[in-house]
Length: 148
Image (cartoon, rainbow, N blue to C red; front, side, top):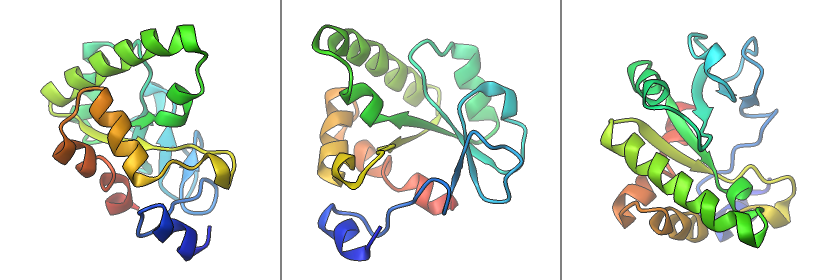
């Protein structure tokens, strides 16, 4: 991704899966975002993708291992109209529970193309809709970049 587009969207830089960070590949040499709790002990895993049915025990494990809980907002936005309300409610409950438990929260836009990338303002707005304060939402945009 070019720097000009990243700046226009409100970012210092945009991390690319496969170039800057790996997804679901725990044996990678680069930092990894896991999609299950099975690989949380791997040293390269920096976070796990959140799913709405995560239990309190799973959230506690994420917090204990000092990993990020990464919300894929494109996945939420891409839901059909009847599903989006229910998914927003579940995601909001998970987000608030994770914050209460001291889990470090990160928001990401796992976009498949440049056109699907959410701007920093869009991500902040979605996180606020899910129940985070504006300052917490802004913080949730920086944690991943700090670890890569």
